[in-house]
Image 1 (cartoon, rainbow, N blue to C red):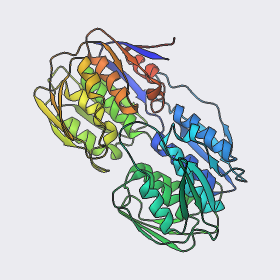
Image 2 (image 1 turned 30 degrees about the vertical axis):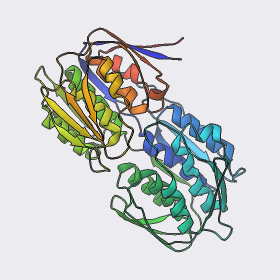
Image 3 (image 1 turned 60 degrees about the vertical axis):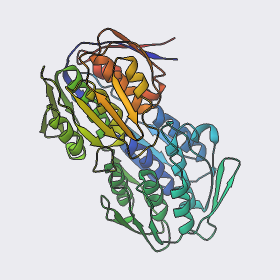
Image 4 (image 1 turned 45 degrees about the vertical axis):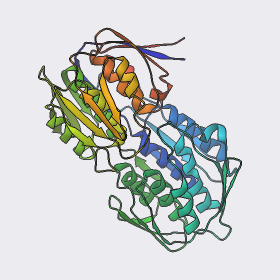
Length: 431
């Protein structure tokens, strides 16, 4: 099993190109199930989750081709590939446990399968162990659209022999995954669907832009109410995946910890306004330029701060572990309240192995800033936790070994190459 070795203490100086967003690319790929035509997606990142979803789609009948990929280096060019997905005929309605159980987004194929073919058998999902994240919101909404739902041996068996029918759906809580799923299902439903309490995340907006290019009729993306007027079919389209705001925020926090000067290219800073506000309040210099972001941190002490994770446009839970690592270097006491996932503090005990002083009180983490972290053996517990350990190790004294980095490979493209090009001493160890 691969590990990553980091010798901390080097400042980050240089430029890092930001990849396409994993959390946008996955639902965009699944949207290909809605049409007999070809969906061309640009700026697809090279990640384990992309490979896994390609296998899931392939088993359902998708034909997938990929143009040549430019590996990111010190230059400022976008690193993504162009993926062409065509599903002229869905040959299988069965998304297996051994694949879907490894990635939660795999479950989202249920909506498009029902919308286009009227039936689906999909395993209950897996992914990072950061909370229960139940799929009841998805299933209740699909039932309101007219689907018959049964649970059997760990699978959801869904049928809609007369097709899906538009209706009003009000989510009891904001869910990005459920919003993605029902958006896709409703595009081919008969009549109008109204989603209330919809997720406002940029990745949802990106999916709507793609669906609209395919011929869907959708209004209200980026707000809490989305209207979908069903159409009889969707067509071929081309779409470019938006930049990964979580990756950009992660590297910005890395340089805030290590010191230095870093330019992040291929960035949409409009999608990072709250995290940037927090970083500026902590004393980090953040200069927003056209399609890029320049982050500078001198030897000044970071200031402590209190934050609460919330759905977009609030502080993203996917940056909570990273900002916690950054808070260990603040001069004073900081607090994080996690409101999205009830079990997303598993990185705390691993940060403590590096010398962090963090205590937990229910959904609250209290971080007391320390002078210097020290390298140690640590273990990644989930995707975002793994990268928080990497950026903490960059600021720690001595050698850190991060184990179980397969989590990291799910969401961060070429992280060792990107960081080492800016002065980090980091390498992958393969057993």
